[in-house]
Length: 467
Image (cartoon, rainbow, N blue to C red; front, side):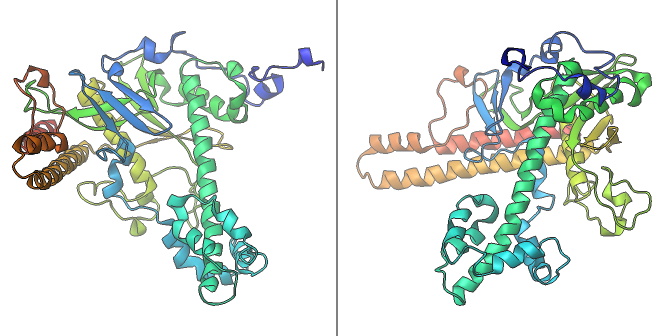
């Protein structure tokens, strides 16, 4: 083929590629020729933006003040996907490796045996010649910091601390493989989500860009699902995709004492609307492989409550979320419940108990649609606890600022004016709705603390009304 006849990088899929997905090319009821966010806007849309690189939301309140969610360097507000962190178990990769390392290192049938053996070998490990030290510089510091440090400080001699370094090197190899698998899965999930968003916004499969070619079977499965497989009698059609949401409390009275607190923010994958009933449904795409199930006859390993598989081995999350199981499925179920609550109470979109996980993955012929249970009263308690945690943290910051300013004032004996100025600069103040109407903004930590206490009371009153 001559260069000028070559297909462009973003060319549509060819005949062979489309043949792999059958005669399906797009939704039977494509939304509109306009993107969904433009076709179905919400008045709150301009108030929130999302930075995908930092995974941080910035909310601009009607009063003009800005609050961020998801930035650990500010006030530690959590996104909706992270609200269960205090109630669900965390996967501790290092602890799992420590607990199983001796067995893996001596079982020649184990998949980690060869990797561990090489990492323990004085020559192959690369510790003696310093190769391992260079290699560990690429290790993600938040994933395996201690092991990498042991390897980097090894002196190349045998025995003693260096023996520990060989073991650390072996453990690091295992953790590194896990980290790579996680990053690969995350990247694939992000790409699939972006492609499904394009399909839901009316793109035909024949129009999808080159980067979607590897996942055309997944796109075709979603098209079939929405066209004819998923509750066809309701004629579900995409209403919004990737709509950033935020949840705030307070601000009803519009006074400076009634502060507005943004508690959390998040983004649902897909909101559907029935052309028949006008109902809404909430969908969360999960690009995850089926589980390998041992000893459970007829189980295909798709996303389902783990309690239904092995009830004796499944724990519950901590109260007030003890209605959710302490598993990945429970985490997904919680996320959908939080999103549904925010959509209903802040956006006027009531999905009721129509919350679904749509599981897709390369090799799965059809979308697996799993409806999750509704636990809205638990979500109310969760949001109440989260708002109280944020308010308490802000009160603590104000108190710390007051103590620091007091020390500065004591060090400036006889300089009352300078002491007052330092105190004003050191006080952490809460930006509140309507403060431009106040005669004077809060100028000291005591007043700021009173404001936070008033906000805390407002939080409790408002959340109580939502039960």
